[in-house]
Amino acid sequence: MATGDLTGRTVELLQALIRNACVNDGTPESGQEVRNADLLQSYLEGSGLAIQRYEPTPGRTSLVARIEGTDPSAPSLCLMGHTDVVPVSPDGWSRDPFGGELVDGEVWGRGAVDMLNLTAAQAVAFRHLADQGFRPRGDLVYFAVADEESGSAHGARWMADNAADAIRADYVLTESGGIHSGSEEAPAISVHVAEKGVAWRRLTVRGTPGHGSMPFRTDNALVKAAVVVQRLADYRPPARFNELWLAQVDALDLPEEARVQLLDEDRIDGFLAEMPNPGAAGHLHACSHTTFSPNVVAGPGKTNVIPNRVDIDVDIRTIPGDDEAAVAAHLREALGDLADQVEVEALMD
Image (cartoon, rainbow, N blue to C red; front, side, top):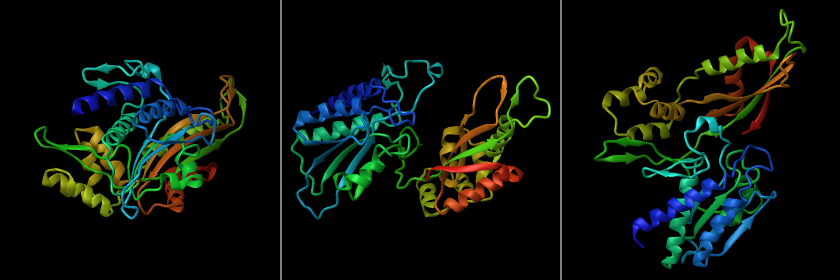
């Protein structure tokens, strides 16, 4: 089969995955990845592949397919792609986020980048190998997993706890590794070999309820929460380097002066602040720092009532060496004199 045919199949499958709108908002009944599981199963079964389905919660379906290797002692490889997407704010889109439109050679829609593109491409490659009668030395596994976007309790975590043998592999290829560098004539894409840690936290700020018509000298939890959010936004933990960071900088095609600054813990932040490409700067900053992003604020929610409680959900991503104790220390430093007034609950580690 020509490469163009495989590309066409991938585009069509990606469009269909997007249109299934498997939106995961974190509630057990959301996602409904069964729609994408059915689609992928129908596609893969065209080559006679045996498919295993796993559904720990109604509608939260994951798929596993396998091409058996010829040598049981050879290393195995898993192609892992998730089938859910995060919610959308439609007014922030110029096109239908679930339309899967093909415009000027690009597919538009929620999940086109994260990561239905790869989930589709892996499925097409996997079926193509099966169609050709390919037999690897070690097993080749295709794993289309639910609930990646909200903790994996209905997806990878459940699979690891309950069906580990179905997905066990020596190596895994999965989403979003690498950034583009180099020139148009000689482009380069780095390969990522690790992920940062996740330490989601819910910060609860309490106040005293009252009537919104009399705000003077009141104990408004939302007002205090606003200060907490600003302190988190302003917090700048120092860069800390490890062998993975050193190897990444060494692999990038960068001018020598840029390389020197990226390897200097005292200069890196200033260099990243002045980088003309904010996307690349954000990536490099995230690879060299523990980061804090306050993303959700929730409270009782009545316009004429002064709130007595506000919850702030913070997406914390840790670099190697930062454990739970380090996260707690970071939060205390960020919050300063407000630290004792804020309750901290771990949502995910």
